[in-house]
Image: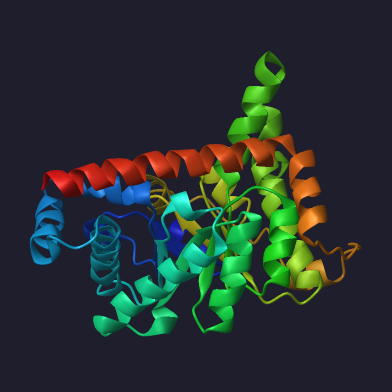
Length: 315
């Protein structure tokens, strides 16, 4: 049995890609997309006609609507291949606007429903800012399920649990990147792998907290830099993995054992916490890594959204 098959015994495997033609090789349950992944896909010859066709069909409409229709077009293609859910992201430029995020999330769902897609097969992806979390809470109350992304800190995870969001995506690799860069020459790679990886530790802490206190929000580890980070989180509810790392797991038959365990978490000694807006903002501000990576992530998604718009305008 290869490591991917072994991992599927403990964890729901999700493909992190807009390149839906790769999906059938790995048989993931779910798939996630974001503006950067869609931008990367539409620049490939295989997918350029899909962008052109969307523009031709809706030319003259508002640019933000054409963008959403393109995202939904990709999502529908993905859903024709996988059995589970696809995550589609709200424009990152709305990350600090609760009402606009709710409106965009509702529109994305309406576009999916117009294509005959059931509401339960789509997760609306929102940045885990305070405003994004409040928007997700409103969407969930309307029956629209959400995936809170760009999540780097425990306080973000706690606030998402309080908001009863469907799923969170803590970013393992980007946490690892920050600590490695911060440590500089003092970083010893061999000492910071597997269970000692700071990104892995962050997800494990969140997973254990959720299971300890019966929080139903699903935990999906994301943004992996190596297979060791993935295998150290076997047992997490879901893991979203790039095609390159899915290929590595498929090519490896080394033993893989369950690392996270919900029953063990229930017995752990963990203190319950809660946040309102003021205490959330203070806790996030106290975490330099999370503050920097959240801001950086939103900026990067905004840049790629603009690039995607330019491609739509040029089509």
